[in-house]
Image: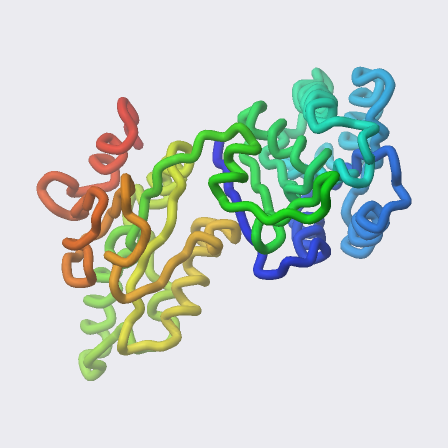
Length: 335
C-alpha cells in the first residue's frame, strides 16, 4: 500500500476538487446536503469530464447500498477496465453542523467501501482511492483507504487547509498524519542519473554515434529517453510501500531543458503522482535528512555531507537495486 500526501499550490478548494475528479474513474459524493457549494461543484465537474458520479446518503442499509453500487460499477466498467480509482468526496463537518461526527463519517465510509470492494460480484479491482482531505467524508475516505490497504492519495489545498466547526484551519504535514492516525514514514531520497536511469549507457552510445558532440547530455531529448536501470522501477515502487520516497537529482549545467526532461521521465516511468516528490537541486546536503536515506552513485554534489545514511550505489556494498532493497527492507528480494 502506497500513501501519497500532496499539498496543492492553491489554497482554493476548487482546484483540488477538479484534480481529484479528473484522476478518478468514479466520484462518490457522500452527503446529507447535496445543495452545498462543494457538492454542486463536484457533480458539475464529474459531468464536465465524463466521470461516473454516485451520490450516497449516509443512512440505511450498507449492504443494500453496496449491492446497487456494484451493479452500477459492473454496468460501466466490466469488460472495459481491470482496475478503477475511487474519488471520495462529500459533506464536511462544517456543512453537517453536528449532524454527523467525524467518527460516524469514518465508520460509514469504511463499511461502505469495504462492502463494495470485497463484494462477491465485483470483478474489477479498486486499485486506488483519492480524496481532497476535507473534514467529514473526504477525510473518512482517506482513512478507509489506509485501513483497507489500498493505494491512497490525499490531495489538500495549500497549507493542508481543512474546515471544521470553527472555520478554516491550516495544518502541518505532521498534524495531518496525526489527524489521520497514520504513522509518518522515514524519508528516502533517490538519485536519477545512474540510479534510476542509465545515464552512462546513453552517454557512451551518443559519443560512439556522434563523436563530434562534446557533451551528449546537451542534446534535446537526452534525459527524456534514458533507459531505466535494471530493477530501478520495481525497487522504487517497493520502497514506496515502506517509506516516504523522493527523487533528488542534480540539474545539468549543459542542458537547461533537463528540468523538463527529467520531469517527463519521472511521469512516464513512475507516474504523475511522483512528480510531486521530484526535487532538482545542486547541493543534496540541503534537504531534510535527519533519520533519512540517500541512494546516490556520486559524491560530488553534497552527498558526503548528507546528515542521514548515504547509500553509495554502484559500489561493492550496493552494486545494484536488489542489494539496496535488502538493506532497507528486511527479508525483501526483487528477484
